[in-house]
Amino acid sequence: MKKIISILVLALIAFTGYTQIDRSKAPQPQPNPEIKISIPDAITFDNGMKVIVVENHKLPKVSFRLYLDYPTYAEGDKAGAAGIFSELLGCGTTSMSKDDFDKKIDYIGASVFPNSRGFFATSLKKHTPQLLAFVSDMVLNPAFATRRF
Image (cartoon, rainbow, N blue to C red):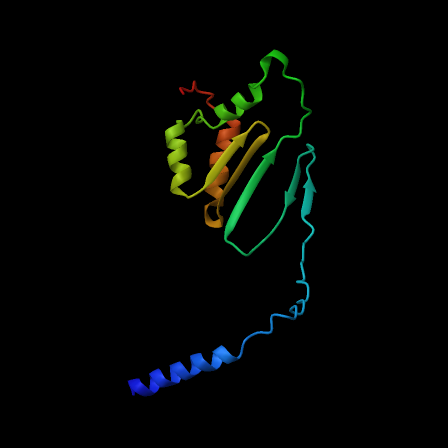
């Protein structure tokens, strides 16, 4: 039985060696893929806050981005103040230390990135309430603790 299988395998290998692709001709182009981009839903609240919702149900993941659209100004002799603010925004809250905040974020497998214009946060969909609670605590109750480098 083993001899028959090995002979068949060798015959198959030999046969495929004779059926080579003609490389002198360019392959025929394939049809263009159909790309469907949905228009995001935009909601504007009475206070002027604009929320844009983009849905993609391929992965069980959510992402949130807060962008504060305020005019930039020349920082002059205070250059870097916005960067320091964003670094301090991620240094814990009045209700929990930076280590506790980081442990809770890591426990749910989330990522939070504060910046000078707001933040970006992402996690699995099932952890959305916890993530929003942590991020709102970070934005509304920052500790602005002294940071040691």
